[in-house]
Length: 82
Image 1: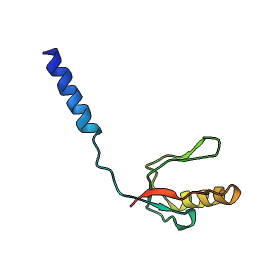
Image 2: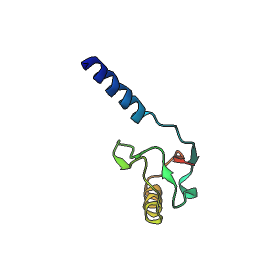
Image 3: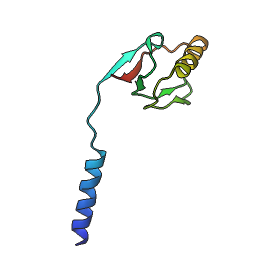
């Protein structure tokens, strides 16, 4: 009985954790638009988390990101869900 319970739990965890990968696209900071969702977290050069993946972009978010970009340019494009 215990083995079946563990097997069922393992199957459930696999089912819940199984996600269909969403399509992603890269955008430079100056092309970001409200409503886009980050597909990868944004970190400082020192490894400090600025914005987590899954963050929906708002006008305020984009303004803050542009301010940071002016102070310390973000060299790479940002990955967002398309």
